[in-house]
Each structure stands twice: as structure tokens, then as C-alpha cells.
Image (cartoon, rainbow, N blue to C red):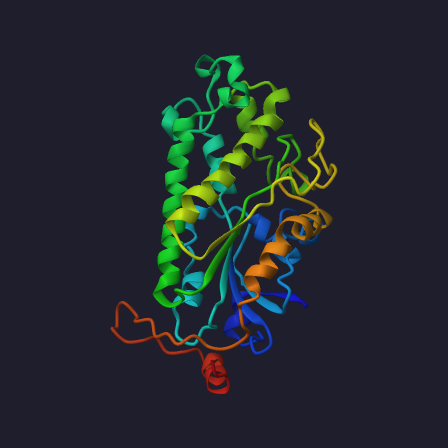
Length: 320
């Protein structure tokens, strides 16, 4: 069984095969695309997934993209097109890798932001030591971030329900990363977590425990907030599937290529132990093939948009 990754251009130029593969659409961040250059240094979690059947994934994920923006047609018009244009595949699932970049942005917010609009507390705001690593975290800020992320998932759910109400949305948590000054691409990108923690004056010995709390909180948010709000939602609990990097290292360490991205082998390890069993169970009901029976109305003309030539050819040859 194979998982084949396609681009939007592959889709529009009819270089995909959905007759023998399950059509899946994907979007999100570097965990769904690549976390260093050249890309094969890390690969991605999406590359490592095994659905138990042939799956064709049209992938819109790219590094740096934030969950809050994914459903916005002004920022991601190609993804929106693939979800709404007549003649698109009858998507069986939407893979989402997101939330990490949103969290990074909030971790970088300084004292100039209200405490309900940032994640980290600064020294004069720290709670008593008996609170453990949560003494450094703003619960009000976390709640505000969660509202923003929930709105993003509600928007993706609404986009799905326009034409693919029966489609699953599948997402993942992250794994326990070690905040450290280990950038990607020789310093061109990252580090992502360590600078904010350092700026907040937090002792670096507490950084791994803080990251662990945030990953656990993110799982709780997905499982207990999002999953109870929208249907057809599968959370892959990827926590604890790899060996954390050693603190204060600056390069590849254990299963991690840099501060927040796994090595290619690390992603394969994580997928095998934490993702594939649940994916195979969920994908058992997904079927290969065909063109969705949709006709999204173009907002300006009042008419359904014409299909690209390649898709018109394909729609005549494929039946649901």
C-alpha cells in the first residue's frame, strides 16, 4: 500500500490517479511538508503515514503556515478552489497539521501584550514554585489562543460541509520537543521556542517541562474542545512516540533534526507507533475514486465555474 503526495499543479494538470487511490486533501505547516532544507533531511509526518490502502494526497501544507489562516480563501485560494470547484475529487479526508506556528507566535509576545493575549508570564508575574512549570504560563492567554484555534477549525468544518459533509478531518498533536537553540537551514529558520522562553527570563532547566505542558494542553484542546464541537474529527495522539532531544544541543539530537522538527526516521517512527493503527481503522471505510457531485456557485457571476479541461476529461471517464 502506498501514500503518494501530489501538488495543486498535479491536480489541475490531471497528473493524479484517484481511480485506484483514495483521494485525500491536506493542508497545514512544516510537519505536513518539510522542516529543513534540503526537504529530505526531515521529510514530514504526512510522508510517513500508512493508511492501509493506496492513498493519493494533494498537499497544500508549507512551513510557517498558521492554523488560523488555513480556511481563508484570500490567503489560500488554491486550497479553497480544490474544496469548492466542480470537478474536484470526491475527497474522503482532510489532513490538517496546524497550531504549532500559532503557538510560536503567542510565545514570542512580550510584556507589551496583555497577559490574556500571550502565553508566557514574566518574572514579576510568576506563580508560586509549587505550581510547577505552569507557574510560567498564562492560563488566560492559553484560553484566548484556544478560542482562536477553535474558530479556525469551525471555519474548516464549514468549508468541508459545503460539499463534503461526510469527509473526515484528521489532525495530529505534536511530540515532546526540547526548546533549544537548534535552528534549521544553518540558522535561516528558527529556533522557534527557545528565544521566547529566554526573553521571559525562564530558567532553561524548566524549558522541557514547559514544552511538555503545552503539548499536553494542545492534545486536551483538540480532544475535548474541537472534537466535541465538530463531527468527523480524528485526533492522532502523537505524544511520546519519539525520543526527545538533549537539552542545550544545537543540531541533530536523538529523533530530532532541529528544535521542532523530527528527522525523516523520527517521523517514520512516530507514524508507525502513534498514527498508522488509528489511520488504518478510520480509512477502512474510505473508497477510491471519482469526482464529487458538486457545483459551487461563483460569487460574482451566479454561475457554476467551468471545469479545467483536464478535469472535464476526467469527469467523463469516472463514475462514483
